[in-house]
Amino acid sequence: MFFKTIIISETLILSVFLILDNTNIANACTLIRPDGTRVDLMGLPSDSPVYEGSEQISDNEAPGLLYTYTTDGIVSFDPVAGEESKYLDSTFDGQTLKIFISERYKDWEKNEADDFSYFLSVILEPDCKPGLKVEFRAAIVTFTNGYDPVFPESHYDIEVPVPLPAGFTIIGDCGAAKIEAIDYDYNSQYMSSVTFSLNEAREDLEVFSEKSDGKIWSVSLKTRQTFRIEEPLTLHLNAYDSDPRVTGLAASSQVEITIIPDLVTSTPASPVFKEPIHILDIRDEENIGPIQATLIEGYKTEIDVELVYSNGEHLEEVFDANIFGDTITVTPKESFGNTEFSGNFGVLILVAKHRGTTRTGKTVIHVTLPANYVTAPPTS
Image 1 (cartoon, rainbow, N blue to C red):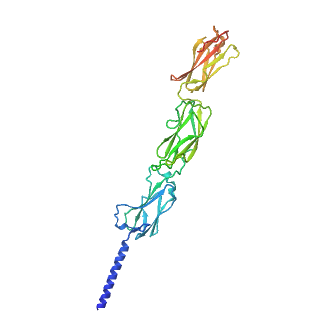
Image 2: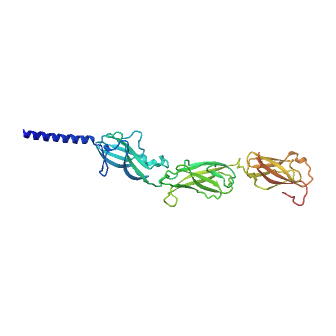
Image 3: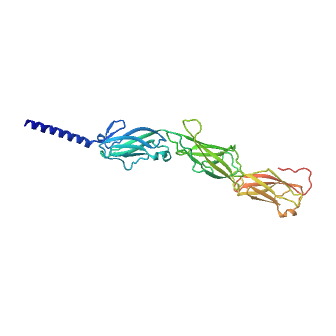
């Protein structure tokens, strides 16, 4: 009887131990870190996230395995719906949890704004603790100058009136065109900069770099002095990406710019004649050629021309003046051959005036008449 009691008692104790052990296994919800330390997820409040991982990576880190964890009592470890990670992926086989840097990370600088937080994370939820969010993290701490500046286009055609005065903005705010370059490397932790230069040496042009929004730099191309071209001018603009930690220029790219002169219109400057004086000799009445006076500044279609008396014979009523483009042609009227002159010269002022304004340009026309004279008449 005594022997049976001892056997029953030992059996009862063993059964209790087995029950307790199975209960502990059933209640296990443990994350085991790579260094072997254990995190009891069951004992953590569900309303507070758990942060795991302190790996520091570079901005050009290769995709691949980042962390390996083992688990105890966790059957599934799934990403939280609506909080999917852009740049970290996870796999779980019922025992081992692996966190990877995804292939998408290769282009993260192109996809993110300059104020990106620089923390990569993936949020997972274990089945053994519903509602608990475990966030696995890595921090970008090393930045490199990996991207050349990028122009949106490879070529720009820019039409401008000519000539242009000094200080005129050809490219830039309020200019004839706007050209920008993107530096994907730039961010609040790595403040690279972009500078611009021309391949061609031009004393009449200068280039500036202006920081725009985000990762964008704008080009400013201005005239240093009066800018005159008669044919299209092709320039090559370089963008240099400067590493903030290294002296000198690094990565670069180039865009082609063609400046096309608009020979029909001009800036609202006063008309300027190429020559200050023109001579017309009409002593040989059978060979009277017209005068062609050329404007080099301020010419446009909305110009009125006028002949004004200055000296000698009054000739303003026997000549016509007509403008086409940048050229004003002065010719005798049909009545000229029937006009009698008492003197041997006349001086006219050819006036070109912007219609509706006070902007004018003048040139002198000296006319030699069919009469004898010894000394040259006054011109001015």
